[in-house]
Length: 172
Image (cartoon, rainbow, N blue to C red):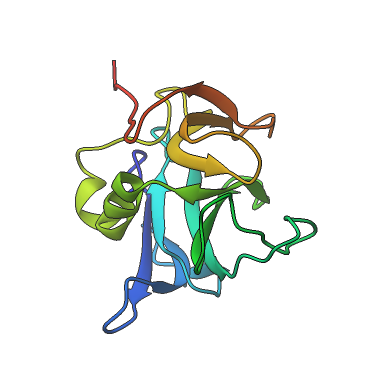
C-alpha cells in the first residue's frame, strides 16, 4: 500500500522462480487495476510520498571477449559465465510517465533484498525520504562496485557514494 493509502500495487508471483508478472496498481475507489508493466519484475518499491513506484527488471547476459557496447556484454577481467543485469524503472502515477534509470550488476546483498522485497517493504527504504532518489549496491556497466544513488527526478547518471555491499535510506 502506498503512503497515501489510496493505491495498492501488486504483481502475480511466478511459481518456482523469484519473478512477478505483471505489475499493476489499483486505487481505493474501486477502479479496474492499471497494468504498468507487462513483463517480468524482480522487485518493486513505493516512494515515501506514494506518487512513484520503482521496479526492477533483469536480464541474464553472457560475457564475451570484446567489451560491452549497445547491449552486448563482455566479461570483466577474470570473470566468466552468465551475469544478472538489473535496471531501475520508475512510474510517476500522477503523470503516468515511465522512465528507465540505471542498469547494474547487483551485489549479493542487494539480490537478497529484492528477492524478499515484499517482506522488506515494511522495514527497509530504498527511496530517499523526499521521494527523489533511490539507493542500491552493485557495479554499473562501467565503473566500480559499491553504493550508488540515482536521482529519479532529474534522471542524472548514478552517483558513486562509496564502497559497500548493502545500503538503505534512513527515514529521518
